Length: 91
Image (cartoon, rainbow, N blue to C red; front, side):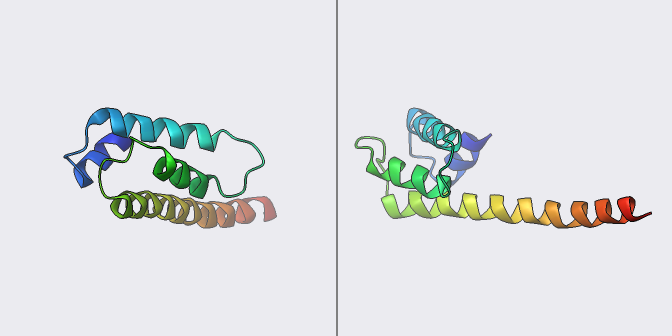
């Protein structure tokens, strides 16, 4: 699904580039004790030679937007669920 989202933004990039980027994001998310895993993934993707065939500014903007939206969605689910859980435990 993530590759399809990236392909919609930049359809001229081959799918093996998107697969490599997804692998880098997945591996960086599995590393323990690293506070900025998202920024690590973006820097590795931009640092790997041969992977970024398009504009590095466009790819970094696309990745950082994805990570920001992910954080906002996490927060939007966390707040209502924690408030409802607090109401349930106080009864």
